[in-house]
Length: 115
Image (spheres, rainbow, N blue to C red):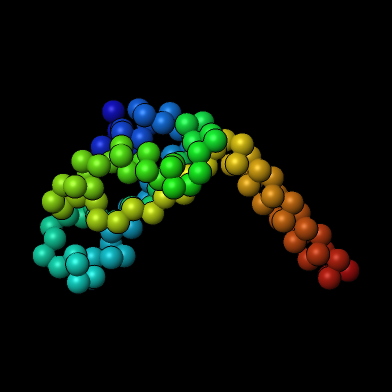
């Protein structure tokens, strides 16, 4: 059991290889829609990597996550905003490989400009 129902629901249903949950609520506390809210957990940014997303387009992946978190989204004082980044393990590997190539290129360019 984790610290949050959000983490529990996602972990149980999607068996993610990567799950990052960021509580961005403090960045939005001053918004008019949040005035009078006593909840400190209203805005989340979530990164999920799961095989469950294989062969599904982004909208379908997001619907899966919204369905899992329906209770938290519907609850008064619950989640007000959710930003999702959903990937398959293969997409994550490709992203990591791309970032490594870009980093290597930047290192090579920096070294050649100093030489």
